[in-house]
Length: 362
Ligand code: ADP
Ligand code: MG
Ligand code: MG
Image (cartoon, rainbow, N blue to C red; front, side, top):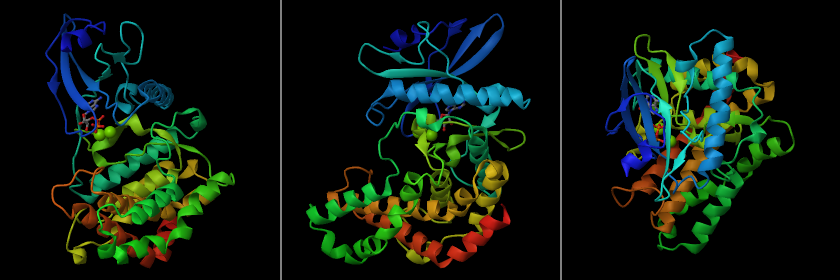
């Protein structure tokens, strides 16, 4: 099987056995080395998760479009294009990916050498560097025609639709769990008007459609091994047209706190204004000039709505019997939902302070 796949590319030398690489959870990632008279060169080989991504052709078209654009931008500013973005290696048939006889889809990237990929924020500096990297991503892609991108997961951040799905899960109450979580259900329903704020601004043409990454975690950036600087944004499967505030907001949701996503002791779950400021600073320093004034003003909405979306998805899954998010113990999705609601409350308490931080870095 692996031989069939490797044979789809024109390798310039002898190819090593691919070995599993990294700690990604979505795709199957391998590293391999090609040795020739010129030396050794590493590549990343990935099996695309086609259960999650039903349209690999559209997905790869997005990735090639965005990385080609980023490569040109890097050249223009004198940066090393090989380290500023991913580079898709086309197959021998000049395709961006290979579909094997069993239907599985595979792609190859140049390995970005001398980089590190951190699984967790170890210091405020790491979080800052991730903000700079994702801010740069926005800045460099500001002129990209976002409407030409495929929606790899339809309705991904359609918050009103997420709420409608939640309401359905409550009404069906398949596991008979709704009665024990009345307070949480009320928390979600009480914020119904909020869920429309950003989609309405977009529909009214008041916010621009942007290239969004939609998985803005620290482990989706490669940092320079020597300087620690955020170099290259990777994991572009979820690149879609969307709102800048949603990418910003998702980073804040998981990064601006010191707790586990399923922390059961809510006294330990607190939205950190300090981390919020660090991320905002990096993100706006890198991308600020690309954003409109309203786009900047509405960044806190992104934080709140991404957190609420996640909370309602966890709670929906709990009500439906935990078939979407993998659980290790029975109440895990409920705990996850509760942390999101506690963080949302923290944001609401700090709403004015969040606006002030945004203004400070505008
Ligand atoms: P997943 O969607 O499964 O998270 P990723 O595309 O993020 O897959 O890849 C998983 C891991 O592989 C990354 O976290 C990173 O450590 C490593 N990786 C991916 N692409 C490259 C690359 N081009 N160069 C070096 N490392 C890479
Ligand atoms: Mg990843
Ligand atoms: Mg991914």
